[in-house]
Image 1 (cartoon, one colour):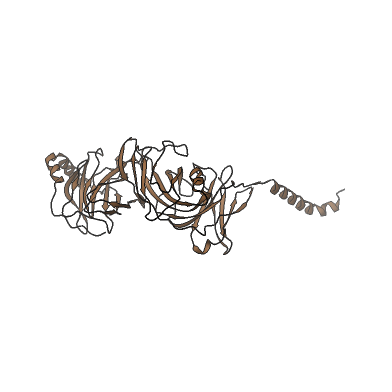
Image 2 (cartoon, one colour):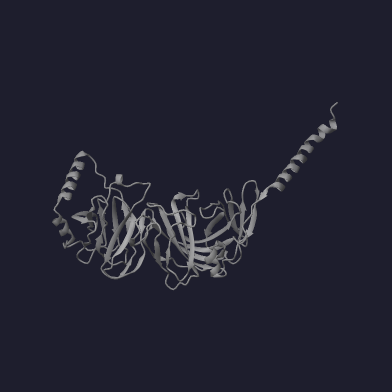
Length: 439
């Protein structure tokens, strides 16, 4: 006979059993463990970049998760105002599999008291930690004039420290744009820190991630003047993010090559595909070599207050080492009829120009999207000053129809067959050019 009392009590028993099992499951869940001494928060002034990092005045919060930060999310909050940000997915790095961080906009109204960070992962017990204070963190200016020289795979890099700034240390980081994380930022493959008074550093052949720079790779180098909490010697020895109080980060794009003795050239900051430069303190008539990625043509412009460009020197070994010079009329670019010869400096007349184009560099078929190739452009200027201009890579000028293609081919052949003496005369070109425009 079925016990009616049992039937009446069965639902309650089932609920009780589910509660017991749920409590047991919660009791057995593995808690997230944050590494001791890894909790950090700092103010960062970020420069423009194409490495996937938001530019501007930021607060970064971070910690290391024991084991791996894969699958962990981070949320931050400022208790006095109930402001919160997140959750954001943590991104393990090649140099640190446990790294977990997030950024939020800096506001002076949210720095007087400590922030709270909460780390969560499905199936594990969340953990909340208190971040260190950033009440005294200052806005550090950006470094400029980043240049590379020497070995292409272990280059010496140099930069200009911000005027009037005396940081405790300088952080050097390298990011690989061929390894984009799900967050949209490039993976970090190297980290180092040196004394704040120094402005040169040699990248090692083996990076801190155990990787090496690849010829034709797509890298971003970050230079970060840094103020730290506690002893600077501790930060230099361990590079712990938890020791950072404030820093600025300027980003520069670099394409390694296999050569062992490269001359010094300045690197750009690439934003929206445009190579932007910030090279200060140039001497009059001194050449500045600028590195950009190979493209079919380039548009070169000086900055608004920069001195005029008085000469250009292009490299050899790219196709036939002959390039077409297009000058600016004030409204459009026109073919000057002049061939620029790789390895031979061309001097502009009349005090120089403010902008020009170089065409016929390479066809799209010559450019391998998988392996980048650097193209170095040498410029001189009419007087001492800065170069804050840009070099914009452009696609080939489209030619439509069979007849235009035939005409272009004939003109190109005729140009290549012109006597060398004519090409040499181009370097002595002294026609009255259109005055440079202020850009």
